[in-house]
Length: 214
Image 1 (cartoon, one colour):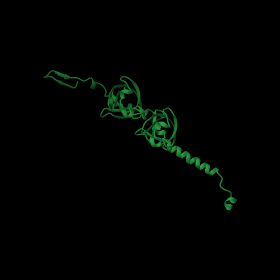
Image 2 (cartoon, one colour; image 1 turned 90 degrees about the horizontal axis):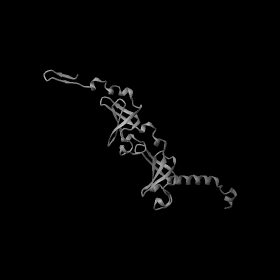
Image 3 (cartoon, rainbow, N blue to C red; image 1 turned 45 degrees about the vertical axis):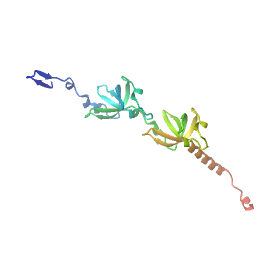
């Protein structure tokens, strides 16, 4: 009973107040870092709302769907009623808010790719600005047109084709922006320097007598 008015012959009741507030136990039951299965209940331009088994809903922001892909529309990857496993990122019982993440269930695959490392990749798309390549594990990289080759060419399609396997060196890794830039040209130049250095060590110089004779 919330209120009672004898003069107006009214009484206010609440079913909600008769039960324990689930938000009181959310932080202890679902601390940050824990995993839980939730059900998708609705969408918003900035993410998807999912319900805990006890009833409270939390948000999966679009930036927390994938480490490597930009999700513009949450409805493209989830559907209403779908049950998914998520990781609890933050709880705020005072404001009755909880945030979930999907990508946090696994390590960031971009972190295994280091700058200056050599990578095997496959050409996915060729454009006027450069080449989009597949690095595996759903990771994409970009090779600017100026870094495609040390040889002269007008279009990248003259020397490469979609589906072709190529080797390149990583010149930039930006996990926050999901951006990896590679260069075939820098790798070619490095291999040339190594070959020239090796050749110069193996090629004997003129004999001492020949130096005096000349």
